[in-house]
Length: 269
Image 1 (tube, rainbow, N blue to C red):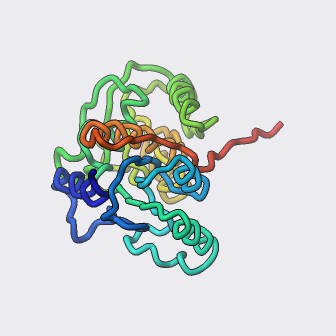
Image 2 (cartoon, rainbow, N blue to C red):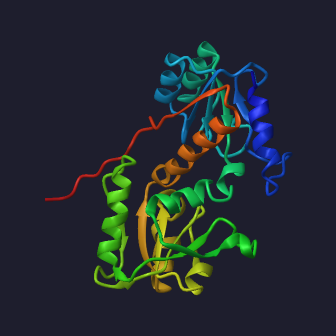
């Protein structure tokens, strides 16, 4: 049976854009040498996800984001204080192994985070990808049939409903005609360079696009803005990771889980 390190090494060996010595793609809990029979894949390993993984008998939980709310590999800032103490105690009690797969999967061609997000939104044709120049490898620009911004935003919202998000926020004239959407990877959303290449509507996430420093600036540059939750934009990529690993490690049972808290909205009356 493979181990967590076998799975990690497989991802790193096929990710030439990642420096193995300076990546957050590390084992952050449990014994990485233990054999893996059942593994779960999720976007964020919240307490409920860890409990469900343990109840299901999983040996390994592969997540995209840090379990202790800090991007750096050590994740040390919150382990020794609440709510990290409670989460660490749960990990110790369950013995669950946690492996973070982030840097490898963000840029994985065709089925990684960015391209799976684009596929979930079904843009018709990719006309520019950042890795073509290496200047902005996480961004891409697409072509869709011309349509009002209102209609495209509704289309995005409808797609997101299947991922647990009940709405999107939009900046721009609802009747403006758009045909060149751009998106990125999680917090690393499309920015001014891709607007200069012709993007007329940007799909960004709240975590990486604060109002005055990012969204208003890009709006004043001429782009309409559709804002979604971070998890919604990356969940499709975790589903494709689950399928990819299941094909590569057929002796392991993989399952995808999205148990992190889903925000919901209330409209004023």
